[in-house]
Amino acid sequence: MSLLTIAWRNFCHRPLSSLLTTLSLALGVGLVVLVLSIFGIVNEAFTRNATFGYNLVVGPKGSALQLTLNSVFYLSQPIENLPYSQYMEMFPQAERQAMVDRLGGDPELAERDGKYAAFVSGGYAIPLALGDYYGTFRVVGTTTDFFEKLRHGPELDQPFEFEDGEAFQAESEANGFFEAVLGSRVAAEMEVGVGDVLYPTHGDPEGKGHEEAFMITGVLAPTGTPNDRAAFVNLEGFYLMEGHAKPIDESEKFEPANDQNVSSDDEGKLRPLTIPEREVTSVLIRTGNMMFAPGMQNMINESLEAQAAAPVGEIYKLMDAIVGPVMQALLGITLITCVVAAVGILVAIYNSMNDRRRDIAVMRALGARRETVTAIIVFESFLVAIIGGVLGWILAHAAIVLYSGKIEDQTGISVNFFTVTSYEIYILPVVLALALLAALLPAWSAYRTDVGSNLSA
Image (cartoon, rainbow, N blue to C red; front, side):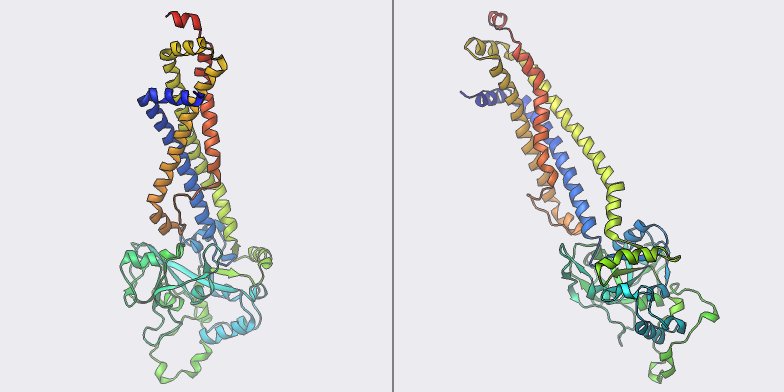
């Protein structure tokens, strides 16, 4: 009979004690696996969603992390706003001239290339204007470039697709500038769709509701990104809502050059705000060459009005400074649970030694060496560790599968039963090491068992 078979029979001889000891270890291992899996999911969700093809976010001076969380994840609150003229610094002279002609602004803005136009040439600059809510979801004022140029997915190669409808237009005859596109979660939770209207609230979800209604022209297909929980409105309409125009003096007012040729048919149409009245919360930048990003970032950060943040770098800082230590603390607590379970193995086997001293003495009398008896005790501890470890892993991954739908909805990460983190391969060796330590005292007790006294007893 092999030593492993003897160890298994000893394990089965005390079914209740063995079951409870194994279950306590399984729960400890399951907690460790869950913490590691949650950390992996959180880490992947933040780092994957930290960019959609752009490599810089430009905003007002302040916290770079707050700028990233606000502009990329629609969390936190806007720091402040940037003058629209700062956004125009991303464009060459011809495009700046077109903006001044269309919107009205200081002619000097159109006399030169923007300071950062050379960096952005071949890339894009997409403005964001934040500050309103639709229910509990953030309202984002932007342009159609947002849907046309940004990409998502693990390889950043998937364009935005529409589950229903289409993107809003720069201006439509039917609804002027007041059109909107909803993320998939917004449409589902607010129970609205194409053809419905939304009324943003100012400042926060409980703020004053705007009178302007935005016609919903499209609903985005699920992307598993923060954009699923945002309502995107035409930037021009966002500016035209009450309280969104920057107050200016009479000396700052400039009439658009296009207004000189306004026909009688156009007199009743809404006029967009002029450049001095406009502000942006942030600008998403993709440089024409990825190597240009550090130079542009340094140049912007040296200015007095704006700052540039690299989203991926800020998220790694967040993980290192906040999320990482929290997860380490949780992992430490769960490891303590495993140590307590290992102590349970020690207590269970050691308490059984009094009942097994005669059996051990008989084995010794039949020729078994001390090392053989010791190995049986160690194998028995390893059996508890292996069964408990495997059972804990199964329980943890079963729980992950049970909530896989919610995980995918919230983070965009698809998980299944065999989705593992790189750290999980260390769990079983650690558990076996704990089991070996737990077996040392009972094994030493078995090793010192006196054959004569126990046989006579």
